[in-house]
Each structure stands twice: as structure tokens, then as C-alpha cells.
Length: 456
Image (cartoon, rainbow, N blue to C red; front, side):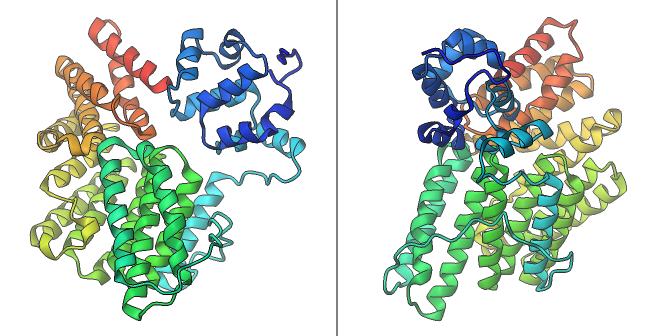
């Protein structure tokens, strides 16, 4: 039976509440969503007309092609009449009303600014030991798994968690969070059982550290696949476990990562507050390399706020802390921050300033990103895409259009191999800069290729 109708939503509301469909929507498995619609008699042509896609795009998705770009997911949801909350997408007013009317057990989506305030309150309370930003309800923190636990655990059990986290983090670095997020969450389900077991004080502290690190990875991979609310929940739990373990460096790590989430979503003020909290923990840890990482990210946030004096101050401090750091004594999580990454972060801060003053800061961003991009290998493909995209964007801002196009094509080619929603977002500035030179056919083609890539 063909269920396409002419009254508002292109499909009847009960379709979205069927269990297979709800599972597919929750996982943002658009291929399965389209297959479910086909089983209900909806044609590829009708899906394409509702979502604004071509029939060939719909066909590719039915064959398994992933859809990760937020704006495309939102367009699919709105076009087909899917309540956005079913896919974990931000609501607009109309969608919130639709969900409230269609299901009695759904809670209205909180405004994103409220969620940011709650996380900052939680972070301050955990880091400082007091709710210095006011009471916080923690409604975004996921419920603990209630599963049977082994009777007693030892260091070997904890080492299994650490080994799994390392292996999964390597996958994330190499191929993106989309390749391993489900595996991280599954490992967490097993690992959290160990909290119910008896253990020595030493083993329990190591367990807290290991769970904090795994929750942090779950948060990062959730963020990388565009799942903001799950990311925030995992980072909140990671922060609690790190504090229980009295591991200041790990507290700093979690705050740094959540700050990076807010930078990505163009919220530098909130990011800066988290970086500053993280710097307090970093200084308590005694690790100069940890302090350097937090200072470098503060510089980036100040760049987005167009505060060049503060950028230069934080870049200077980053260099000083990095120069006196001993990587062999640094915590495991921060050892990624090499001289290569130092140049990358300085490049990012100047890229942010170049938005406001390209003539002054774009050449600096180019010089710094060239230094970092020369050293990236296949084990850091996602980061390499980010660096190449920054370099290409600032080549164009600085007037070297052909070099920008050349580097941009390399960034796009590598980006197509990485399962990360962030890749599409980070290529957006390059798309815009190339698009400003539409009289140049190569620039126009690059802009159009990035646009098509971002829409899938």
C-alpha cells in the first residue's frame, strides 16, 4: 500500500513509531529508514521528492551509503515528517509541537544553551568541588547500567579495559569515530559491570581511571559522528570517574575535549570556560605538557573571539610550557601533543583570526599548517584532513588560489576515506572560500565537489 498522502507529513505518523523504524532513526541509519519506507510502499521517487534528493542519491543510500551531515539529516527528517527528536536532532518550534502531540512519553527537547549551562555547572562542581555556577539537574547524564558484576576483580581486568580503549582510539584516529563508536559503547557496557565487584583500593582507583578514559573516548566518537547529547553525557561521566580517581590530568583531558566540542559548534565563550577549568586541573597535575594543551586551545578560542592580544599571550605560554615538558613523564592521554600538533594549534588560532583580518593572519596560518601537514601519516587521517583544509583555506585567503585548490583537493580525497561528521563541517570554510572565486573554473569545481560531499 502506498502511504504517501497530501496532508502535511508525507507519511502517516504511526510509521515512525514502529520499533524497527524507531531503532533505525535512533541510529541515524538512513539506509534502513528508506528500506522501511519501501516496505510500506513508498517509491524512491517519492522519497526523493520529499527529501530534496535525486533518485540516484536515494538509490545509493538504499544500497548502504551513509548519511552523516547534520543539515542533510535535518532536511530528511523535515521532508519526511520525522520528529527530529527521534533522530537526536535539534528541534525547532514546529517539530517540538509535533512530537508533543504524537507521543505521550517524549520529553520536550531542552534548548542547547540550557544544556551547555548545565554541563558547565556540572564541570565546575566536579572540578572545583562545589557547584560554583549554580544548581544542576544532570538530566543529560545517562543512567548507569544495571547488570550483574563479577564477584572480584584484579589488575588484569582493568588492563583489559585499557587495551580495548587503546585499540579503539587508534581506529578513531585513523578512520574516524564512525568506525568504532558502537564498539566503544559496547565495551563500556561490559566495563561498568566491574564497579559492582570487590577490589583493592589500588585496583579500584585504576578502574576509575580506565572508565573515565573509555567514557571520554565514547564522548569523542559520539561527537565525531554528530551525536552531541550522547557526547555530553559520556564526558560528564568521564569527569566524575576522573575526579574519583583523583587524576587531575585526566580531569583536564575531559574538559579539553568537551571544550573542543563547543569550539566545533562555534561557541567559543563556553569552550573558553571549560578550557580555563581544565587549566586549573592541568596545573594541579604538575604536567607541563597538559598545561600546554589547554593553553593552545584557549588561544584558538580567543582567536574565534577576535582577541589577537590574548591569542599571542596564550601561544607564548603554550610554547614555554611545551619547551619545558618531558614527554616521557607526561600522562598517556597527552602524549599525542608533539611539535607537529603545536604548529597545528597555532595554525588553528591564526586561522580563526584570519576570518577577521585575512591579510595579516592567513599567511601565518599557512606557514604553521604546512609544518604540521608535512608530518601526518595514515594513522592520523582525520587530523590530516583538518590541517590540509585549514592550509588550503588560508592559501586562498592569502591570494594563492591555485595552491589552495591543489591542497584542497588532497584534503577532500583523504576526507572521503574517513567516517567522521566533523570532516564535512571542517571543509565548509574551504567550500566558501573557493566559492568566492567562481570565475575560476577549478575553484568553482572544488567548491561544488565539497558541497556534494557534505550533502551525503
